[in-house]
Length: 418
View (spheres, rainbow, N blue to C red):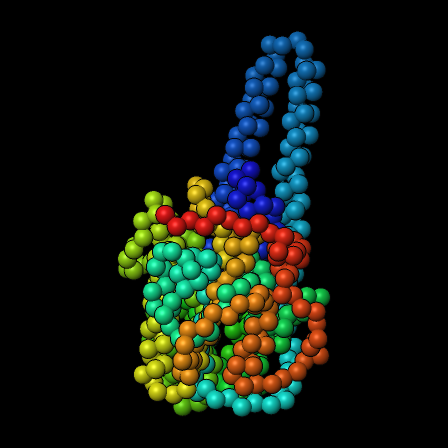
């Protein structure tokens, strides 16, 4: 089946994407499955019509009874297994969302031990679907990040996402996520609030309701929220990330020390929808891949503009950027898509830029972005503790939607550069 080839077996991430009508993964997955189911359905209809037409003209009706039984048994093989797996994954995804929603009323368990926050403006840019290997700041041969590759800051070369899609990755990135209870009360927004910072959430991702996704559930805790799209994915797909910049510029002018969370639509498939008026600056021979590379160059421009605004403001600032997950990029008929079977599905950019940065530093050493909360708090000057401190490290472990696996066991994809 096409979906099996492109995505592998259905998992909780696929189910969650279909439940969350504001995420493009749903359309991606449905389109690929639709073709396979139509072909399977038509084949069954054709055989049944053939049997019915031949029934009266062939005395060996028992042969057709065996054929009908054979068809039914084979229908049981893939579609039934798929249906059972889909039902189980949908149930798991729905349960996880419901638990996260209920967790809104759960009090966080942060104890602030010490705070010495030197920054007036803290900007956390949550990127979308950017695979690190396609950024020239990390060595990609085409110039996708002309500003970043010369920018001063700390650029981590081996960060990995805890999961291969937004639904699974963000709660495990933005919170000390309890895998047993599926709770995210100990999240970055609550920590910032408890430390006395003003909190803003600016999102260019669509939103149906208040608590549709893990991201909107965590965003709920922010003191100020701005969603550029209150509808579904179709309303979000023509929205431009650059539209968030005026919001950010207005927010940084306020007097209070603050954290601004900017949630981008980024390079999410279909990447050509992300460009808007931004030019197509690459020619690899595959337009969709060219759009993907140009969307990363657009990200580079977004971060440059945000940095310039913070510089002009004149107050101490720090920018954190990471992507929620990577993608599968290849020369197939669907060359830019979600996946969970390769390292590139988890390889993400992660860097920190502040007003004190004096040089461009590449920092090696692999770590999972499930440790983001610790890196964030350490950099801005917050020391805290929670009852879950001391949990085992997940630096080499990723959750693929079905199970926790060792990242190092995954194969690499061939990087496409023209």
